Image (tube, rainbow, N blue to C red; front, side):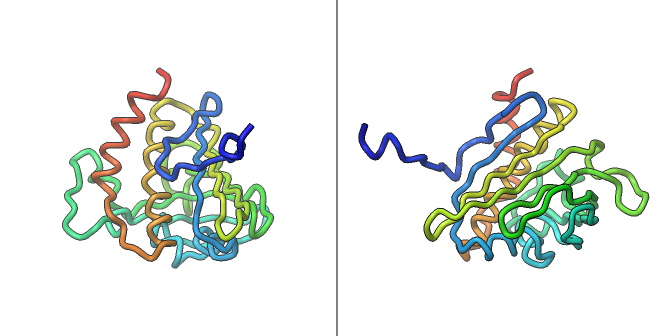
Length: 196
């Protein structure tokens, strides 16, 4: 067996993998070191550049507040398709940290109400960020599970794909090349690929 067949290659453009009903996983190879990637996941200002701002009480049981302003992530002048207008922001999601092992593991509930308001995505699911050093790079395994419907699977699959692409751009020090255009295309792609 040659070395190429033994090497696990990560495609940073690959679609998420459905693990089971209600669960999707993304694997991405990011420029390290691991502490830098951890900061982009946990620091509100750095996280705002690719996902959402908001405080995280970094302890098991600690509250997570995610304040999405997706309109701020898109390149200037990129048109927003009509069906995504409601996602430009602000949108608040809440959750609680369920597992924590800095700088390797962060798991949290997702989509809970913030300050007694309406839940951000209507369901309380769980997101798990796992980081593993790979030389100078870091393997990110992002799993979103306990999704209650195909509609939730479609939304988070396309959403995570686009947001993690924005994280990759940030870590490489380049501007986000697309947001709404990519989200629109990926929504259609995932709709074709996800089981009925």
